Image (cartoon, rainbow, N blue to C red; front, side, top):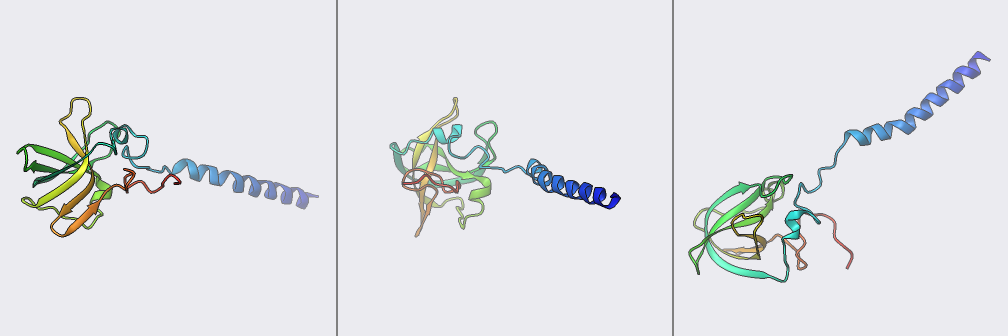
Length: 157
């Protein structure tokens, strides 16, 4: 009799542990997502795939920026446009994505940039990069629909 009660209690304990353990594991792990750079974010809502421009210029410097609250640090180029002499920030994307690409833009490099001009709450105008050409290389940061490559899922065609 006592053995049966102990067996039932052990079986019940094992069953509850098996059911509750995955729930506690899920609560302790947080997916990072795209840190404010993904679909539906305020930043991505600024992008207009129908308003793409191409500029040619020279890299002045590479630095970082955080445009919006709750957004991770991004990597950007500062480019002096050949046509206007204006310095324009060019957003390459989130730091965690851009720094893992096989790219290098030293000061003085001549580049051709295709992207969307945007600004946010009085910030200076910047370019949300689609494609960058430098020397004999082409770097793409968005697909033909304007979806950033750092977002891993895609909508079905």
